[in-house]
Image 1: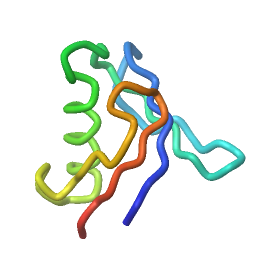
Image 2: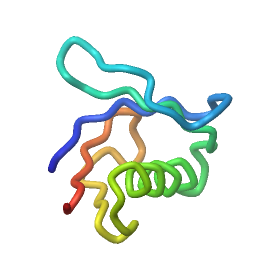
Image 3: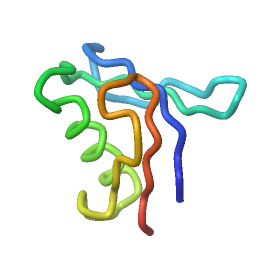
Length: 74
């Protein structure tokens, strides 16, 4: 399954924050966007949500952008 995401780092907690009009899912992350910490936290959060190992969640694009595409292998 492919997901379009908008990530909001440095939030109070890590959680889903709704959806945008184009279907993009917003996710708030407590992690800071330094040295890949926010991306790692995002992948771990999605893996826990979908009940898959972190290795089954793949960042397709947007490593340095708030807009990301992620693939979850179910």
